[in-house]
Length: 245
Image (cartoon, rainbow, N blue to C red):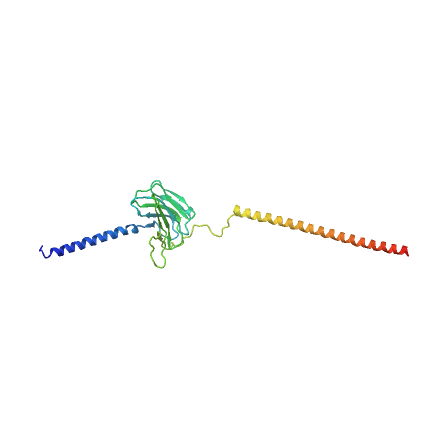
């Protein structure tokens, strides 16, 4: 290499090293943001029955491991229709009002959390969103609950499962909404309370009517006695006047 070309070579080498360093820094900063939560199904079809859903939450921390995942079930899947199929050792599923929680001993830092559930039947929909909240052993919480709005892709999207159309003749296993449910104890108690209150009101009204009738009768008797007394007094005065004459 000639003396004239050495400065040029050093300049090229510095540019390459600078570019590599910048790319490394960019990738390092983008690392945590690239983590995400996913869901897959062995039968991703509307109204499919006995479906296995697999959830994967990618680790975002190098110093703490997953201890719990909170999953909100989409409309059409009830917590009672879900059963744990597979999970990290020692993890258990606990049903909630709108979904379930699966968790247990902390996983090793950097290890993804993967679990699967069995679902009785998928609803008749085009896609299902499973909002997921992840908890780490150091108390850190990562929420993958955002849905696309206005055509913009969210920063922490909820796991979404896209479904194909239901098979011909497929039907929902859910009970018919026309079936009448037995009255609840609360409703019966309320109706009983209302009936009792109504009976008391009727009795009070009857008592008031009776008291009113008695008052009218007594008033009439007193008025009659007053008139009779007045007539006797007039008669006595007349007889006294006649005797004097």
